[in-house]
Amino acid sequence: MTETDAFAFMDTFRSLTRVFPVRGTEDEIRDMGASYFKTMRRYPLTSVRDGAEVVMARLKRLPKPAEWIECIPRQRVRPELPKMTPLEIAEHVDAEEKFYEGDPCG
Image 1 (cartoon, helix red, strand yellow):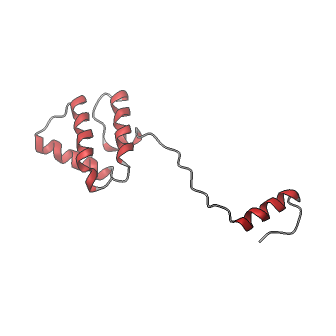
Image 2 (image 1 turned 30 degrees about the horizontal axis):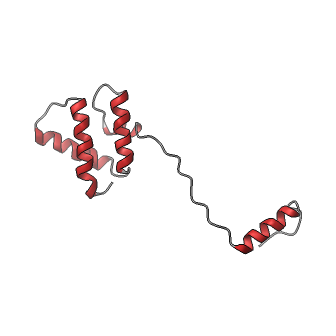
């Protein structure tokens, strides 16, 4: 998340505080939200929101940031493989046709 996501994050945080009531003044709750935001900055806002949905479905109290992070669904991100050049494709096809028994490729 970036600073521009702070308001959207606070909306999500406030929805959690409505589901799981928190004691404290408005300033204390805002400060708590700012601390949660700071802790969860490395996650995309969409993932944080998805985690909030899981929190509301599974937990019985407002989670600590680490508990919220545990509820963020893990997305398997496959690394982008580089595209083969035409020369690499030709070498690969040649190696397959020789059943990988020829000279080493470049």
